[in-house]
Each structure stands twice: as C-alpha cells, then as structure tokens.
Amino acid sequence: MATDRVSIVVSKDESDGFHYPFSASCHPKADVVQRRTLHWVRRLRLTSDSRALSRIKAANVAQLAAWLLPSASMQTLQLASDFTAALFLLDDAYDEGQLSLDPEAVAKLNEKYLGELFGYVEADLGDPLTRGLLDVRDRIKGDHPNFFLNRWLSHFQYYYEANLWEANNRMRQRVPAVDEYLMMRRFSGAVYTYCDFLELLLDKPLPLEIVQHPLLQTVRDICNDILCWTNDYFSLGKELRSGEVHNLIVVLRESDRLTLEEAVARLRRMHDDRIEEYQDVKEKVLALGAGEEICRYLDAADAMIAGNQRWALAASRYSGLESLAAHAG
Image (cartoon, rainbow, N blue to C red; front, side, top):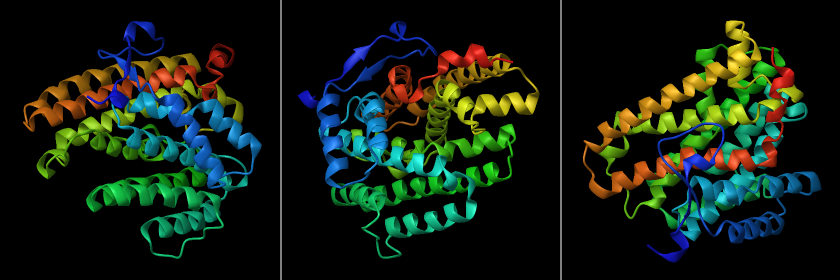
C-alpha cells in the first residue's frame, strides 16, 4: 500500500458515544488536504463571508473526509474534502435564513444548480457555489468512468430535492412523521454521494451484478442511516437552539409524545439494532463473491461509519450536545 494511503487506527474503546464492532481510522495527510481545501475555497472565491470561512475551518472538512475515507489516495481524499467544503456552504444556504422557509425560491435554486451540474443550462460562473460544484463535477468527469459520474450526480440530485421537502415543512411548521423522516433523511444528508466515493478506493469497479445487488444496496442504506442518525444525535443541541425540526430525536419526541431523554434513548436503540442488522447483511454480501474487492468495500464502509463519529465528537460544528440535559423533557 502506498504511503499516502496508510491510516492511523483508533480503537473503538477510545471513543465515547456509540460503539461499533470495528475500528475507526484517520488518513494521516488530513492537515495537508485541509490547507489545500482552504486554498481551493479562496482561489475559487467560494465565499466572501468570513464567518462561513471560519465555520469551514472549525469543522475541519478535511478531517471529516479523512475519517470517512482513511484508505483513500491523496487525489480522492482531496476531492472528497473539497466537495465537503462546498456542501457545507450549500447546506448553510439552504438551511439558514429566508431561503430555508421559501419552497418556491428553493425550487428555483434547485433547477439552477441541477441544470448546471447536468449540463442542461449555461453555468452562472458568477455564482461562487456554481464554480465550486462544477469544479468537483469536472474532476470526477476527468478522472473516472462516465457511469460513476452519472450515478454520483443522481444521488446528489436527491439531496437538492430533500432540501425542497424540508423548506415545505418549515413553511408549514410541520414536523414529519417518523417513517417519512427516516426515508427522506437518507437524501437530505447527501451520504449516498460519499458511499459512491467508497468505490474510488478500489483498484477496479465492482461488477454491475454486485454493485446493484439488493444486499449491497442494504449495506449502503444502513451506512447512510447510521451516519445521519448519529449526525442528528451530535447536532441536537445546535438544532434545538435554532428551532430546527429535521432531527430524528425531535421527530421521535413529537410523534410518540416522548420526553427528549426518552427520544434520545429510542434513537440509541434504533442505532444499535441497525448495527446488528448491518453485521448480518455483510456476511450475506461476502457470500456473493467478488473476492478481495468486495472485502475492501465492506471494510471501507466500516471505516466510514466509525470514522464519522470520531469526527463528530471533535467538530465544533456540532458543539452543544452538552445542552441535552438542560433541554430534556
């Protein structure tokens, strides 16, 4: 294995929060990639807001990419880090301010960004986020097969559509039902785009009969759920302060008339049950064949799940979990 793909392993016993039957690792070049990502943000002038740039620095998007993809090449890690920076800026645009309450404006913005990404409309290069997102798209297009780009774009499209769903809920002051939220949360988190990046860690693409097999789709679904549910857990304090209802703990509290403490306990049980299911499904996937590549894919999915928590525990973007007790009930 090349030296730029050697990761630093952290035992699960060293972490707080959720526990996993596999370890987290961090790519050792995260600091180098972070500097390059900040240079990329400045070079493309993705934001003129000093607060937004400070939030990207504080969240340390390269650390997130490094925990999610510890065995990535430097090229793939840089791509994931730069995409994460653009996604954080996009997330803040959709989730905060007047846009978050205006479904009509969100729908128009979706048409613009998706049209640009898919090449249906002329790109507005005066828009900073357009510049960043097209740069990421073009790097994927130049370095990987077209089928990978098409799949990645289709998963990214779901993220935009989920933002419209959220804006409609906020405008109507509506807390979604649990089943609806669980389905839509998979799309609002953009996690499927990161599951796509897992394939870039392999020496060759998985064959179609494996990559589209329902069992491997279940692996991706569970990976998505775990990342999103733990994100909701770690971001709860922040979202309670802002009044955001798109959080599984809030949804469980409202739907089942629970106290906040009871809703947190429910999420933790759901999480642990999902991990047990994940372990069972992985065994069935291994029985499909595909040799060493499928083993590496599953190992990478393990690392993504465990690594996401390691980043979330440290990221100042999710500071405020300590306020759980104060808000309980």
